[in-house]
Image (cartoon, rainbow, N blue to C red; front, side, top):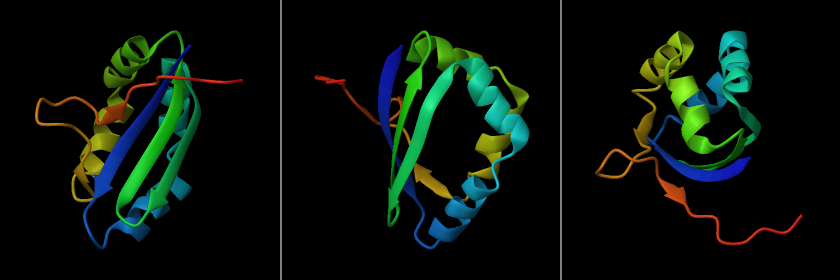
Length: 104
């Protein structure tokens, strides 16, 4: 299992819609997350900044590859184009922080 912390930046004024879409998460999206290996998935939002934490089984690369191959992920990403301002760096990599310490 590998832990992941990531950041999403929303367009101003889209906060309520972002929250609403997660409140009404599509059942097939939830199933795809589980089937791809994403667990303990949590989003925190303060204004237009979202911080996400999740755990990937067996690791982030494998879970991301599985999720990326799903049709529901493509639909979900498309539906957020007018809400998410930025989620990647200039090289297209997810905006993340490196885990450097953990205590159970």
